[in-house]
Image (cartoon, rainbow, N blue to C red; front, side):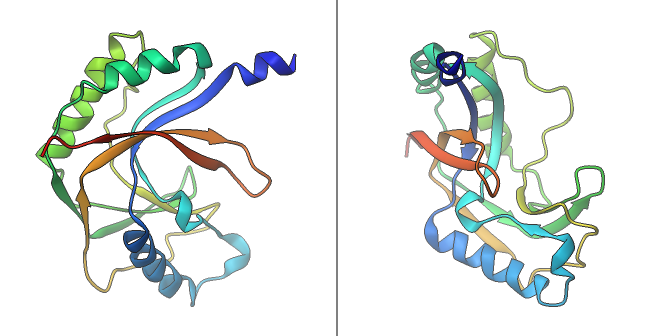
Length: 182
């Protein structure tokens, strides 16, 4: 039975911020949390900040090589995202940070990635893609969070990551990194 569990991996593709960007985002979150009731909020650890590009879910470990091979053919140029908007999803109880303007470069990256993944039998979720960084889970409200200034995220790569359940929430591990062509 244990062998069967180890044969499955929970995978997703994401934009992965560098340590300096993580600090910048964490600083804004900490400022917003100073006036919040922390008993009803579960802040996301800065090492878990990311923007999901494609969530694959539970995948057979034997598919990993094919996924990496196919997605190595995703070609994109460097671009920047401006994270300038916060929001709250009441149903999921998540406070998030994202761009107010949808980037054509990001859209092209997500589309190319999904086109490659569909060739392996994966299906894209039907709801519209909303790029965001989850900041707090189990939040009772939107925290009234606002940014002092927009956060610029220079995108030079994306990653394939694994999510593993942990005692204090999911633990994310980068399995592969895919660089921009320029």
